[in-house]
Image 1 (cartoon, rainbow, N blue to C red):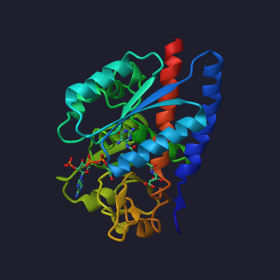
Image 2 (cartoon, rainbow, N blue to C red):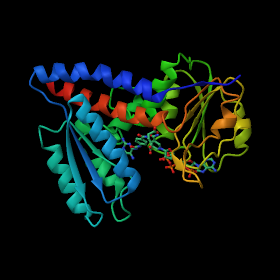
Image 3 (cartoon, helix red, strand yellow):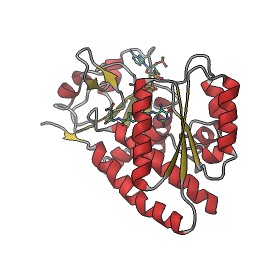
Amino acid sequence: MSATIIDGKRVAKEITDALKSEVDALKAKGVTPGLAVVLVGENPASKKYVASKEKTCETLGIKSIGCKVPDTITQAELLKIIDDLNNDPAVHGILVQLPLPKQLSEKEVMHRISSLKDVDGFGPDSLGRLVLDEPGFLPCTPHGCIKLIEAYGVDCAGKHAVVVGRSVIVGKPVSLLLLRKNATVTICHSKTANLKDVCLSGDIVVAAVGKAEMVKGDWIKPGATVIDVGINVSADGKLVGDVEFEAAKERAGFITPVPGGVGPMTIAMLMYNTVEAAKNMLK
Ligand code: NAP
Ligand code: L37
């Protein structure tokens, strides 16, 4: 039987619809949530995602403060922009769209963003809180993956979750969130032996590799839940995930499509974090 397709667009809209009334309530108290979006250079994918984020802000009544700078910017100049945003009371959240041009240190930039405004959740305070199971900003894409699993009533407790990828942005944090939901988690990477067999033992498979359709349909255990984080352009110019979707959907119980799966959730959870950041100002 063919899998239930997880509709990320629908779940993302439900989340942003609920946020709209929170934004209105904040405005009634004199606070307009503000999100600064820093875009360095002209990476076409980054430009597209930043535009989607700004558009969603507008729909929700969140003020987006665009900071578009050329890729010739120096580290010192970029850090000065971060410092100014850290000190600006109208800015509740700061997002620096990654990847940054080679001459810039992503790590130093992530460390510089005030932990109170770290709506991407990539800073040391946010990531430390994630490890410690303390409240804090969760990274948007991993949080979105979990929200999709929850929205379709998939119980993680006692299940074997296999995460393919160990990046700080996706693989590692999504693994910690699955652990928080009492899954038994295996984290795979480029040195993992017998990847196919490991995937086949997963009740939940999260693919965050960045390689088009690398996880094959026959690597999926019948009935498993498949969350495909990958966004790749195939040889014929189509957008595809890290999972061989057509074959995998014939075996999976639930599966996310690309596009329309995890991508829209990344934006919804960014909006969620921005509203949280603004609410925290009132506490
Ligand atoms: P990344 O930093 O490049 O990390 C990729 C991970 O995959 C690494 O841990 C790497 O292992 C592992 N890997 C690479 N080749 C492998 C192989 N043959 N077998 C097993 N593991 C392998 O990528 P990322 O930032 O996590 O992003 C992953 C994908 O998600 C990309 O397609 C990206 O565009 C997409 N993405 C989507 C969203 C969204 O909102 N939908 C958000 C962020 C990212 P090593 O650690 O050993 O190198
Ligand atoms: N928060 N997210 C944050 N910070 C960053 O620095 N790089 C990065 C990041 N990643 C990111 O924004 N990813 C992302 C990926 C896909 C979408 C949005 C954000 C998205 O909207 N995807 C849609 C449409 C894809 C398309 O048409 O290209 C989808 O349906 O998947």
